[in-house]
Amino acid sequence: MIRFSSSVTNLRSSEIRDLMSLANKPDMILFSGGMPDNDLFPLREVDTIYQELTDTEKKIAMQYGPTHGIPQLLASLSEYLKEKGLPVEENRLLITTGSLQAINILAHAFIDPGDTIFVENPCFIGAISAFRSYQASIVSIPLTADGLNLIELRKKLDEMEKAPKFVYLTPNFHNPAGTLYTRETKLGLIELLKNKNIPLIEDDAYSDLYFHEEDKLHLQTIKSINPEGIDVCYTGSFSKILGPGLRLGWMLVPEEIYKKCELIKQSIDACSPSFTQMVAHKFLQNNVVTDYLNYIRPEYKHRAEIMTQLLKTTLPKGCNFTPPRGGFYIWIELPEQIDATAVLKRAIEKGVVFVSGKTFDPDGTRNNYIRLSFCNTSEEKIRKGIPLVVDSIRAEMELSHLPC
Image (cartoon, rainbow, N blue to C red):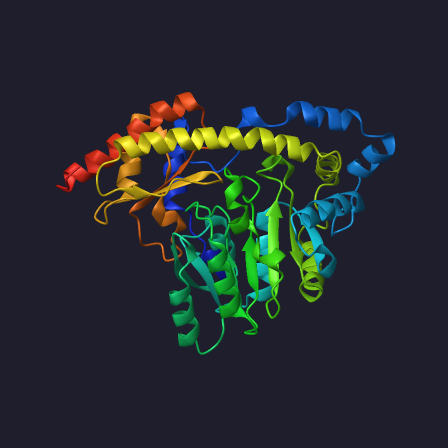
């Protein structure tokens, strides 16, 4: 019998991913994927970037690069992050193969088997899987409309005999909940963690995809607040602002943490792709990123507003959601008796697919939520698909004899 490692043995296929295999029909309406729309990619801009590369730049792009990233991208990304208020000069920047690799590297750096970590509930499934692979004991703290429940966080911290190895958060347009932490919550979190030797991993893939200028005060990252007494490990990604196929992310971390993370990355893949790093560098250097973000924000906002309006007018009583103010997702709370997986099965039969809540629960139990993505679906398909989702919810509520 093959003897796998305990970390691999503990991994399980997601129930939802298994269901998704049933949904690969060409006419299926997809509210499931947290990915940009293929039709919105900056194809002409990328063509121009490549065509204007010098022979020297193309040779750099085709070659292995330094583990921490090619110098050109490190320089242009540093400037981009400085403009966002991040303390680049006081930290070290490491280019990673997607932001999930950054999360994996940080997990590798901090977690010994059995170590306790704190995460939000719900939580990004990629992070949950990464932390489980290192055999962490995951303690979840519920989200509120304003961000992490600080009362529960304080309670959990007081109950712990040994401090958690780190706290992992997605404060800006959370995946899956879409939550934007208020500035007050961020400051309160800082006060709770200050001088407790508990690093904070701040996952920030969506903050550039805001819909309202007035939210900028709350969009300030914890890393850019630059609090004393906390090691903040900031991760970001080109996946949502350029294209996930580039497989490029980054971490901005204190020097001591950086040294360990660079060694870990070196052992994983030596370096991230130089070719896509060069493309990303030019995307930033030529300020194409600004024009592109100004183009896609209104488009995603429009799709979000259409989905929001349809849900407001058709969802049965007892179903609740907060209209998104950025990002990619709408998180719907169903009546407690309703099993979102049963709703999903009905929806798949009708030709539409989404993700049910248990996928994002670190405890794998609570399943009366669904995540709808509006980012990868046209207005026409949103208008066609949302009634099918609502019909599936109604059918389950009727089966449970709930008023709808």
